[in-house]
Image 1 (cartoon, helix red, strand yellow):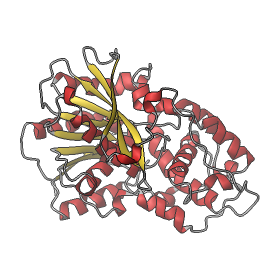
Image 2 (cartoon, rainbow, N blue to C red):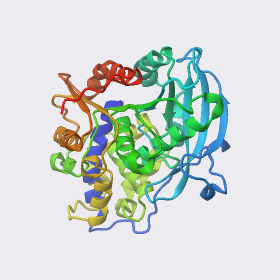
Image 3 (cartoon, rainbow, N blue to C red):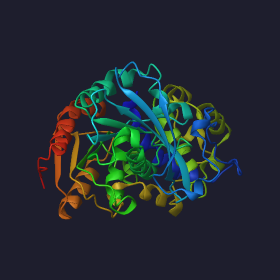
Image 4 (cartoon, helix red, strand yellow):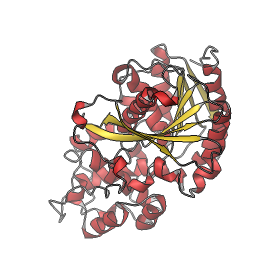
Amino acid sequence: MRHHVNTAVAAVVLLLATAQLAIGPGTAGAAPLYPAPDPDPFYAAPADLDRAEPGDVLAVRPMPGILAFPGTTVTMIKFRSTNSAGAPIAATTTVLTPPNRAPNRPLLSYQHIINGLGTQCAVSRVLYTADPNLAVREAPALNTVLLRGWSVALPDHLGPTGAYGAAKLGGMITLDGIRAARKVAELGLAKSPVAMFGYSGGGMATGWAAALAPTYAPELEFVGAAEGGVPMNLVKMIEALGYNRHPAFGLAMAAAIGLEREYPTQLPISDSMNANGLAIRARMANGCTNEILAAGAGLSVTDVAASTSLAEDPNARAVLEDNSLELFGGVPKMPIYQWRSHDDALIPVASIDNTMRRYCAAGVRVESELFPSPDHLSTAVLGAPEAIAWIDDRFNGRAAPSGC
């Protein structure tokens, strides 16, 4: 069901616009609902977190092997990162090390698609479940690169509060996860060339990491980043939205909840939910894709918000702009491979093209590929082999082509 991710990102804009300025009998004082803390103490933030720098390693532990990745060594790293307000947070990444590893072989940071609000939805948890998307779609691509001797970092890029929808946060966690992986001596990655890969929600984290790297992590050098199906302007998504009920509305509401967790003072949407909205919020607060879809199936904004006022709110708009790559002034210093379908109904493709043109004008080597695929999910599968081949060329020192 992960192909619904960008429907969720799009619809959340409408949910925020309507719920944020509800003019009616809302539920004033309703605070953001955060997920239950992970029962595993490894995920907990240490008391002296504020003394650490972004990317500092807080803890390391070996993990059991994973059936989907035979022969691979698994290491989990807890590190210091930064949230959208600039405060320190403890984040996690899981590093897969191939059996044929050698020191300073390539490192690929692979931003998995995560649809969820609960701590059990994190990639580090999903790796040890029977998640069909991992087994069917992710594992073949990851095993391909592991066989090449690359290590793979899989960050939990929604952060410790499950801030689904907070794309800029995902970029910072991705960068700090790479910093941390390079600092763990036993992984042998201190001087490894690094690339990033991600599609859809994972593409948002990848794209933000690439754009933030020159200012947030200037010491990191990348051979390139492959990002596909990226929703690059949340504000523009408003134009295509309406009030119709949708089978995937639960994901839209989940994204609103996730953004409220990350921006509680700017987006107090829970204040404006009606009683039904709060009840549904409680049902999905610790859920992953299936639970979230079930809780919101067939609903619309009018079913959960106390009002459908579309009055402009500068705080809500600022959050959306703050998570829209098209509107972010930063430019990557690494080559970019971007792929999308010719006509992707789930994302504003013009925003992708505008962003790539801006990167080209700034001197970034950009290669863009279009696929005649029928839907958003198919494009992820069709484009992955070419994206990995592009990264392989960068790791092998071949100059990045440019379609600018």
